[in-house]
Amino acid sequence: MFDVVLLMAGSGTRTLLPYNKIFYQINGQPLFMFSLEVFLSFPECARIVLVVKEGEEEKVLAALDSIDQTRIYVVPGGSQRQDSVASGMKICQEETVLIHDGARPCLLKSDVERLLEVVKTAPAAALAIPLTDTIRQKQTSGYRVLDRSTLMAMQTPQAVQRKHYLEALAFAQAEGFYGTDDLELLERYLQIEPVLVFGDARNLKVTSPADLKMVDAYLQGGKRHYKIGHSHDTHRFVFGRPLILGGVTIPCEKGLLGHSDADIVYHVVSEAIIGALGLGDLGQHFPDTDPSFHNISSSYFVTTAKQLLIDHQYQISNLDITIHLEEPHLKIYKDQMKNNLASLLEIDSCCINVKATRGEGLGFIGQKQGVSAECVVLLYPK
Image (cartoon, rainbow, N blue to C red):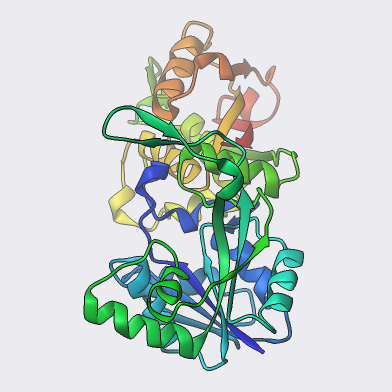
């Protein structure tokens, strides 16, 4: 049996994300879930302690909602890695503990199996890979090339015996020493030499925006997960309101009835994006019973949809919009609608198409009773 300490308390500022990188989503899953699922696949894994950034406990628990949490514990971490490991160790009870970075999502089960086999007879072990780049060490004057055949790049998991780690940790805390990895304390204070198990280069730690693209490619198997959204909306004509379509106020004796400004073009664009992301419909996000949305500019709906795209790491490939109305004719306004949408969504106007068609005197469109619009959107992952 063994326990796992999964470290998730970093900030990830170097990835340039506006949030903790462990919540970056690939195939609809946050980054940390991929290695968590590997550990959960081992029946002999007794506990998995998720050490999270203080204040993010509820967000992590929400991400775990769809899986069995019997073996999972969530605890707040510290300001440094070593403090977070110490926090996780308080929950562990098994003698063998694997310490892993939550930002290493490409962990292979076979690598964990080989590591566990080694620690049956060794007091400590870790995954590591040989260096392939030439390494230069800065000197007082210039640089010196190091013999890369003697160097290894450390990965995680790093396997320790809990009693050894806690003993070494006590020495480190007394001395105020912080190691750069989890095995350094055992080497420094207990003279325990770890066994290095050859790992896989794909088991990289996400640190930069380029790393995000690499793990995206690894975990998606080279496939791009496109999403398609569609929306249709209808509003009736009434006197006493302006006719606003795609952010353009169009001269007309009637406008459209609605709780907001009734910009039907912005409505279908927003809802198509929401639908493509699998997030429901426009009414769920902006209910017409909410007074805060009364007469609001529908551009707010579009910018909110754009933020949802950012949050879910998707961007727009193209939008195709059709407006159904008898009159007025929209030919001279369509380019401005495209430009308005391009500005709100921060995409090129060439990604947007706006069409208009008449009802030829048939139905409520042809009888000039109202306007319908529809939108199809294609999204692709960033």
